[in-house]
Image (cartoon, rainbow, N blue to C red; front, side, top):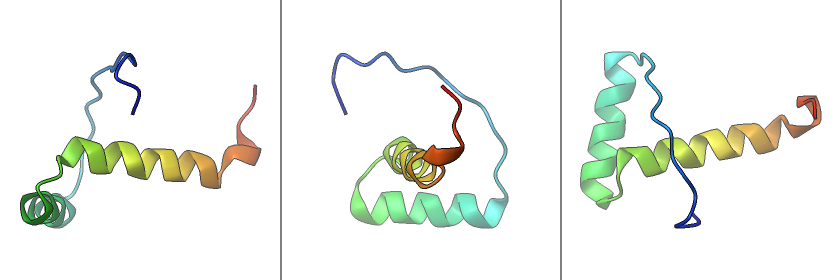
Amino acid sequence: MDMNTRLTSVVFRLNREKLDALKELSRSTRIRQSEYLREAISDLLTKYEDRLVD
């Protein structure tokens, strides 16, 4: 990620099972949960980029 990119906080709900799995993945890999979430959102937006309106 570009170090000059300004980040904004987002709050959302996640079921406990998925949260626990994300925490465990983060703990075992030493990669922050937020990094995984940013990656997942980027992948999702790429997948559906043809549906995005300019």
